[in-house]
Amino acid sequence: QGGVACHVVVGRNKLDPMRARVLDLASVREATDLDELAEAGRQIAAEFLGGA
Image (cartoon, rainbow, N blue to C red; front, side, top):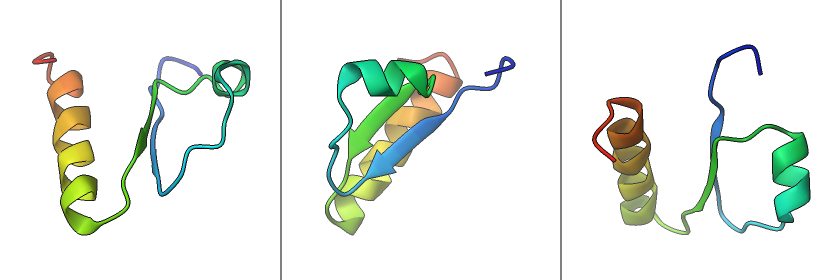
């Protein structure tokens, strides 16, 4: 909130969409290994830079 986007990367997403909305999360991504974590970071960076 307050104009700052909050993106989360988790091992397993157990949030229901309503809870994610209440927390005002810009995105929730799952990553279970280092490759997936790196890809999630690239996706978030692309969104931040306007390339999504």
